[in-house]
View 1 (cartoon, one colour):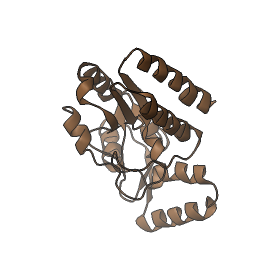
View 2 (cartoon, one colour; view 1 turned 90 degrees about the vertical axis):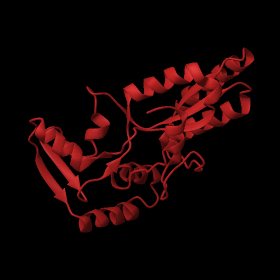
View 3 (cartoon, rainbow, N blue to C red; view 1 turned 180 degrees about the vertical axis):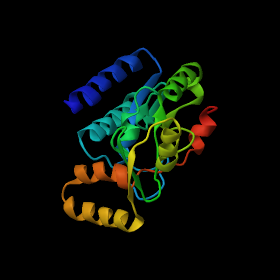
View 4 (cartoon, helix red, strand yellow; view 1 turned 90 degrees about the horizontal axis):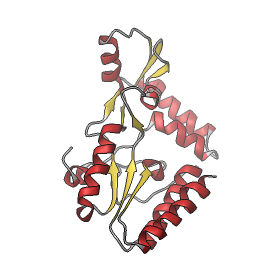
Length: 210
């Protein structure tokens, strides 16, 4: 299903757009990187884990092979809106809004506001000649769980908070590596919480004003 929709259908659109010399904006995902130990930039080699990430990488490759016109592959971080922060809450709530957890005195995660995603697309439509290739798209600043929890509390939310010390945090990583040694997708899912991706943001800042 992922291959049919994300790869084959995208390829058909790329071919039609190329036939008529129409610039292409392709919404991809940071999931194409899989598990990375180093800070990620646009030159980092993808290591997709799971059908979603793999289907997106295949679509990206098809676009780069087919397109003769300007294109942008925008690798989006998880997108949120002010009314829907489910992906964000997953990083520090066991059950929102009653039970939260704080790991390793706070963790930094990368997300993308829907407003910034829309701004980027609109900006690219007007400036596609100057924005070409691959671009990692994340918010200007990382989201720290300690700071977000403190903000929630200041806004009247009063969850019980489970604090996970550094020693237990390290033990959790060891446990994940052992339990999911041959289960790459489950390890990748756990790493999204335990060892989140980190990004260089220079190209994003140079591409347009954040």
